[in-house]
Length: 590
Image 1 (cartoon, rainbow, N blue to C red):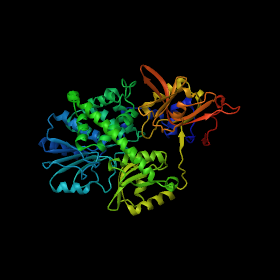
Image 2 (image 1 turned 90 degrees about the vertical axis):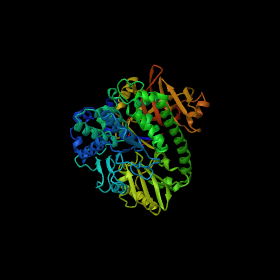
Image 3 (image 1 turned 120 degrees about the horizontal axis):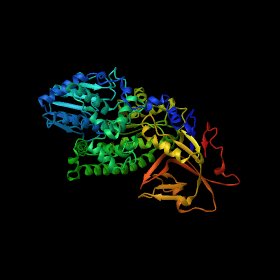
Image 4 (image 1 turned 30 degrees about the vertical axis):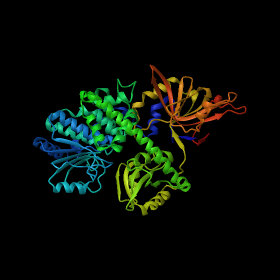
């Protein structure tokens, strides 16, 4: 296990927040921690191109009661984008029976081929997608069907002349480019408020926050951060299905009386929803949408909300099982040369992977191999699939850098998570370019940590203080990582847990050190079953600190990323060293 302090880290636990934020290049701590509208003065809905035209277009069709088709995009940002628009219109106009929500049968977005537009459609609304669907937009324009697009994805060739497109990326006066689809739709609702003399847009801030978090928007932007923090406050928690999800997933047991934590959404709610939106049928996707637009009574009828939640969990379980099988098979196809030398992995997984799994599998392998990963399948000489970046790899603009090679026929999505198409003959060319560009980068299991501290240097109050800042961490401001060394280790204090017996918890002095998803030959599991009482050990760990709230008790815990168990030999006892945290500007390899 290797770890190193983040460059220029003060390693000062007594100035915890300052140290962590400076490590993330945030120096104006007061402004960062604010959550008020003063930070929003630089943007308004009027800064978005075509927004007034979009409002006029929508109201024209609402007043005519046109046959309106609402395309629900298949991810959490897409579903919350459509849900807040639908809920707003339902609350403002009561009867919106002429609006028909539909979703995709596959992984497509916008006007892709796996969407069936009803024949009688007169007007199409596409939240969170559609900006680049030039050909399909033109086809519907020829049929006399008007289209409103409210999106945040980068536009490749300017606005389509055959649709009204509202997009923050293309709007020069709108400075926030780290705003997802649900954020742009919220701004559209503000414009509707202005036109209708209403004040309803803020009723949907909870779903705005959920969409921004799930779409991994950068929380260092003050506007994005403001809407996340506002939406997670209890006073703005209004959506009945979101409330039910929080209870069913048992998130925020301590904090729900005040606010929701970003990680509760990112890890507790979004994955199961995304599994259904990616893996489920069109009907299953619409069932999730219906939950987010349902009343409490409708959710309770025939236990509709609980059934949809259970469906999402089942889809996530199946996705995880299939992903594990695919990952194992893909790893077996990689050569030693690829693993040791290639700075990017471009994997042809034809006949190995289901197309619905390329994104989640690429994400898992990027974390495993600590570099960008592209996984796809080949059809007619084109490798198409998903791109995922690794946060520790020194390439923040992965999609842009791949575009600059000029070798791809399609790249669309976010910088670190996108779809791609690549002629198979260009595969090695991209790898060669990447290997040359990043030839000086060593890919190792190195952990860049905020603090390196002796176990004895952390008091109980430190654990409590660290936990109180949980609400601050998100994309762009990752949760702090600690290297805690010289933890006295007694194997008899190991507990093996979980249905698969692949979770280990070590307890010492009221603190728990927990590691999930352990392989069968893991040292913690082995020592839980067999150990020598005559030997002495210390443990060094890299992990994240929090407080565990269970059965009325609150105790410190460290969720482990990695660990080493070291046998104490000879006359030297590392548990008694007092000077271990000095001068950690070199790599530790223990």
